[in-house]
Length: 390
Image (tube, rainbow, N blue to C red; front, side, top):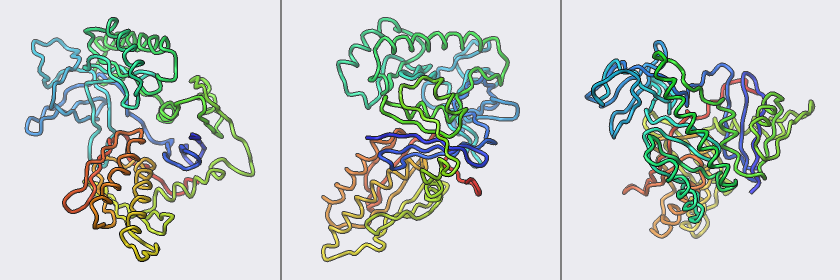
């Protein structure tokens, strides 16, 4: 598969898109006037505890609060003297922003803060060694576990081995984990001497985070027309092709049809090659997607035609979820079919496409009303396309 990331300058921001075999699967616009707090680690101050909804509100900046769910076993790092392990109003704790604010909702934070490297993620409050679900090499997993369990036994954090670790020497993974472990110890040490609202660690520039997440192998390509971005990517040290594009007559965003791509992201209707189409509607509680036959010739065998459209729609829906960064609860109304075997084909196809998504996506099943239920993990908001970007 040919994988390519394209980064181009637009009005008041930077447009970013990922292409698999020249088909866009991810897109984002990073606006110059947007402040990013996702991933930041703070000395948080427990402002309020709301028992009836089992949550706390943590002040992380003057006048700004984040929501902390209190269910499950919390293992916060307390930075004030306490005689109880229970979270109380007035406590100072280490928090990390894990979801951005959306509409009327505050950002969501966690006490299980993460330090992320190229090959591994270290998580406070976790335990043991775990692996990305995409790592299938059992011998590799056993070797890593054997090495790390002896070194990092009984620590206050867990270690996740990322998919990218399969493409490097094990010594590089061990060295990175050692570096992350030192960073963890230093962060906790510093936190104890800092006041509330102090930023202990600022997250990477969101564009650079996207670039790092994109990179998997040396065969990947990154193209940009922004010299500063080009230099930053080169400094990261990714072992793939990085190209600085320059052409006055044909801007990079026009070469890769960014205008039509982001128009499609903003559109309610998406046409399929068969002549059918899908309609995407957003509500406060969920996203609803409807599949229609449109201009498709139904022919004599309607069931076969409907199956064809639904299979095509399943692939496009998976692409749109990733492209638009749709998250939360998603309900899909496929064209009704009479045979259970055909519904199973749609379900299996949807699960196969969803498994390729870099964001955790769970295809649950059809309901009794033959509506498909899907959930997708939320990190950032959906892609927002402003007027006059290009």
